[in-house]
Image (cartoon, rainbow, N blue to C red; front, side, top):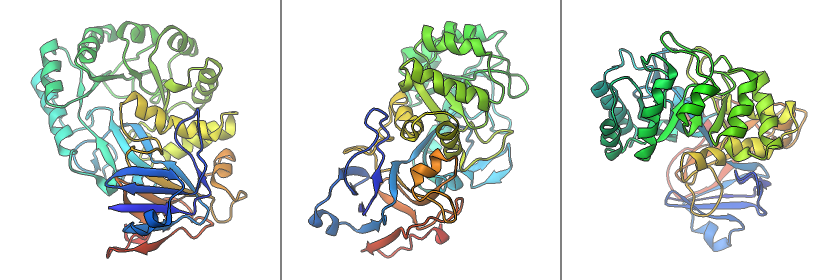
Length: 398
């Protein structure tokens, strides 16, 4: 499918170093972004679908780098069906598994955790709830796993590995497994802070320095934060990427947001929701964390958006997260809300407001256009201006 979004007022790239691009259009073809900025009349007229943004703002789709999926679009933790599809209406176009630890009766032996990771990965390869891409299948590190196990599942396509929920004696016991996973090309993640479920334990900077994972999950707490002094240790004495989450400690979220900019280490700052958990289901979680950073600190809103998009993409080696030629065609159109004090969506986010998600495109396919069911209505008339295919893209039908 070839799709265009025209009459954009602002285009936010997802790259905090070059946060916006001049122009008013985005053209997508065969699931990739063909051009960003200015499109010719011929290019637009050759599209099957043309979305008129009416001056609204385009951003990359949010990449939630910590969700707790199971199988299908269901969470046993909150006994809810359809939460991932609902997250699309919050602007989330990609989700990354933090392991399938919430699977009912999940196995804990080496063969079982390998099988669980492979099965989850394969179940989501061709399943896109609401159009969202879910990178599932993160092996849960358990005692008894050896290097050959990590090579085996990496050869089968599993590329995520999670420490923090295994039955180890101390968190230091994860260090060899993290090393084996990294050796075989996997992205390694670690639960950070206080325990979150029965059987887990606190994991602090001393443990992380021994493990050296790629990503320290929810350093601001999931839901309990690690000690304040640990933040400086991880920031200045390691290259570990530091993820913050909506379902965590707001004070330490804001503290770290200031620290990474002062240290000029913003590339390592990632946003996620860490849901569904005991904190619930948060379709607007990514946006809420952006508003917290943009309204309660002096972080530029474009930087906060980058932490939820491009930064995640770079750390997880994804082809999404940026509005640039050749990237995956995952685009969200934002608008200021009816009745709000701001007329532009970026100003609304800076004000601490949730803004309207007026359209979501994933893989170059419009998933809905006009109004999200999870946000207030926007001020502008974002609409399908032309369609050569028979389909209703309005939010009411999705």
